[in-house]
Every structure is written in C-alpha cells, then in structure tokens.
Length: 249
Ligand SMILES: NC(=O)c1ccc[n+]([C@@H]2O[C@H](COP(=O)([O-])OP(=O)(O)OC[C@H]3O[C@@H](n4cnc5c(N)ncnc54)[C@H](OP(=O)(O)O)[C@@H]3O)[C@@H](O)[C@H]2O)c1
Image (cartoon, rainbow, N blue to C red; front, side, top):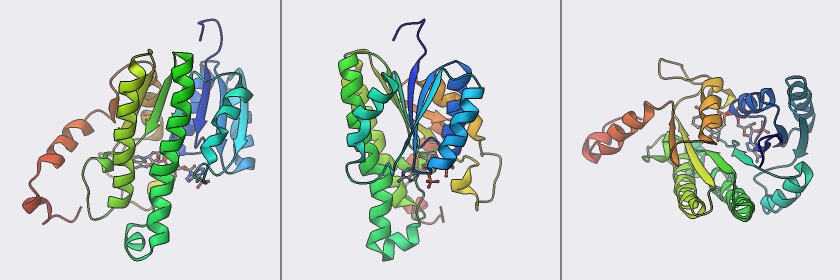
C-alpha cells in the first residue's frame, strides 16, 4: 500500500445499511472497492452511485456469503481488485431466536451466517494480510456477544465467538503490522431492526460507518460503537445471574 495509490477495499455484505455508508466514506476518499453481496442488481446500483461519489473503481461479486466454501472466493476477490488493503465484514442476520429453539435449521442458519462463514472469511483474508504484511480486517460483531440473553443468545453466541476469533487474529497479525478489529455496535437503525421501537441509545448507520472507517487505521482490537456501549456492557456483564434472570432482556 503506497500513499499515492488508491486504497483497495473489499466489503463483504456491501448492501447492509452500515456497509453502504462505509463504502461511501471510502468512495469519497477515492478508494478502489470490491463490493460483495447476494443481490446483484441492487449491487450494481450501489456501485454506480459510488463511482459518482469518487471511487477510483468499483467491482462487484454476487454470491451468498454464508454458503459452504464461499470463503474460497477470497483470493479471486483480491485478484479482481488487484489487491486488498482494508477488508470489512458487515453481513449478518438477527434470525428468529424463538424459532431457533424449536427448529434446528433456524439455529444452524444463524450460527452459519453469523459465525461459521464469517470466521472462514476472516481466516481467508488473514492469510492474505499476513503475507502482505500490511492492511486491516474490520469485522462487525455486536454487543449481543458480550452476555447471553434469552431474547437473542443464538445471535449473541455467534457474535461472541466471532469477537474471540478476531481478537486472536489481532494478536497473531500484530506481529506483521496488520490490524484486526471487532466492532461491537449497540442498536443501529437499519432494516435488521426495522420492527424495533427506537430510543435514545439508537445510532444511525452513518455514525457506525465512521467508527468502522477509523478502526481500520487506529484503536484497539475491540471497538464499541458508539464508545459508551463499553460502559453499558461492563455493567451488564457484571450483573449477578440471580438479578439478571429476573429481567426480560
Ligand atoms: N442493526 C443493529 O442494531 C445491529 C447491532 C449490532 C450489530 N449489527 C451488525 O451490523 C452488521 C450490519 O447489519 P445492518 O444493521 O446494517 O443490517 P442490514 O442492513 O439488515 O444488513 C444485513 C446485511 O447482511 C446481508 N446478508 C445476510 N446474509 C447474507 C448472506 N448469506 N450472503 C450475503 N449477504 C447476506 C443482507 O443481505 P440480504 O439483503 O441479501 O439478506 C444485508 O445486506 C451485521 O453484522 C449486524 O449483525 C447490527
């Protein structure tokens, strides 16, 4: 990565509300982008918009990112873009916790999308970044991964597992000057949470996107988004079980 060349940025789950905002930031910086998502037509629309916003180039890859062996596509993405400096992993599903308790297929879907496949992409891009000895991997997890709650512990388990994986990668890759960061957002107003009642703790996708962009260059391997969630989750993690079990979280 040299300063006079555009940054090469690969965004997995580029149609997520947060990722679209991340892509806009990079486009306005003149970066070269590869956007991966499963809705090809929508992807092309977003790609044209990003070109108009100043992206040096925008390539697209249409695929189900959570299908078995999807992560084998990672080297092809790097080749198509001519490199990969920043990798952003943004896709995910909230899933249906209640259904997941009754139906093994729903539980498997949540764990496959939010942990298994995400972990495989992280491992694939970590190999590339380690060889390159520069760049960053920024992964969107969730505060839900900090403590299991009855309302979403399948999603939380997947995001919690992913956080540990990224923390381990951050440790491994620090030896070669590569950054790996797990972003832990609280509530974000996006299609994923369209049916939720909104309140003062809610963030806009653009605010989270700014944190994601910054995290690619500086800060610790765990980044709460916004930062005040670090304190909220510290409190939530320390509430004793006999109290916690009386709540309806
Ligand atoms: N919203 C929140 O309150 C919140 C809080 C904490 C963390 N997060 C995390 O933030 C990230 C971004 O989510 P968001 O809030 O921006 O929600 P969103 O707009 O609903 O985005 C989720 C994206 O994931 C994509 N996706 C899901 N499964 C996929 C698959 N198998 N292959 C390809 N794409 C797939 C969806 O694509 P399709 O349209 O094709 O399904 C969608 O574009 C997620 O990792 C989410 O878990 C969100």
